[in-house]
Length: 315
Ligand code: B12
Figure 1 (tube, rainbow, N blue to C red):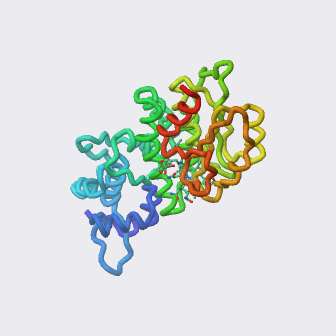
Figure 2 (figure 1 turned 90 degrees about the vertical axis):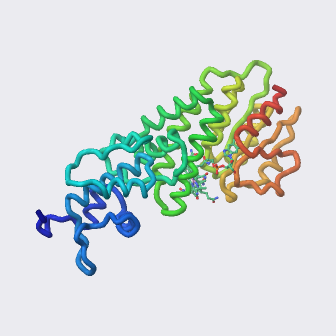
Figure 3 (figure 1 turned 120 degrees about the vertical axis):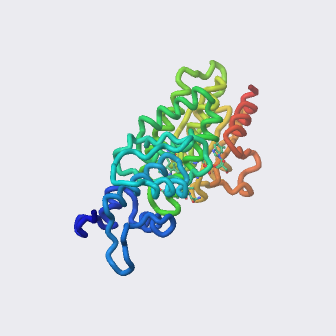
């Protein structure tokens, strides 16, 4: 039986209920035929209870990692307004990392990624820090820091960054995910000490550079190999970097810059010449390699940075 027209929901109301943007609903209508049933051109778009159930299924399956076309096929085939869960597709467990209740409704471009990456992406988007932390802890314990960084965490970070670049949204996801990751990565170094007589390894960000996570990844990867580091964190002013170098007589210094605006190559040129010399290493897309002083070595990825520090220490 048809519902009265005013019992039906507007695009805005459905979008709110599902936690997706109204534009997403219009795309699902246009691209996948998941629009309001009985909608005729010119009339106001109103969704019935059946339509909403189909859209809920669509959202739930996409959040589980099912490609949208496949999710739409299942959702379109849904016969009635029963709000029960859609049958899971093979390979997808149909659960939302955030518990399934809240208005998550936003996905990262992680098509083709493996289950660990998609799971982390879902939990990150749901701001579910307990799950994010647990998943990262498990990955590090099972596969180590290098694998976890390059094959699990980094793909999600890149996708979150790409989403921000495309929509201007998700800074809260960047903060939450980075915070959880920093907690897990820093814990790897617990109990790893710098042996007496060994010159310390300093890790720092360039002045004004807030992207400190790669420092924690490097610290953790070195800790796994028994090498302790001292992390000076985000946005270290040039004078503080110089003071730290003088006071510690570091054996190696690694300086990270993600943004060209934070990478001042002169900071490196101005560092004091310690004796024996500190090995100067940099990493991150911010640096203009041609402007770096000749005594500076560029690390291209995490494994390379680890190898360069090990080499600097003669390990
Ligand atoms: C998390 C994050 C944040 C967090 C940082 C929290 C923290 N504690 O670190 C917060 C929210 C603070 C933040 C702030 C900002 N961010 Co931000 N952020 C990111 C994000 C998602 C991850 C950063 C990261 O860890 N990158 C490291 C890895 C994951 O990046 P990658 O590209 O795979 O790395 C390459 C190399 O660097 C190298 N590599 C990878 N890992 C390692 C490790 C080592 C040791 C080595 C040597 C090399 C190496 O291999 C890769 C191939 O080249 C990136 C997205 C991105 N793609 O990086 C954006 C991103 C870096 N941010 C960006 C921007 C614009 C900002 C802001 C200006 C605005 C904003 N989004 O809020 C501010 C600037 C703050 C500042 N002054 O520094 C842009 C930068 C664009 C540009 N090139 O100018 C990015 C790229 C997002 C985007 N796609 O546009 N951000």
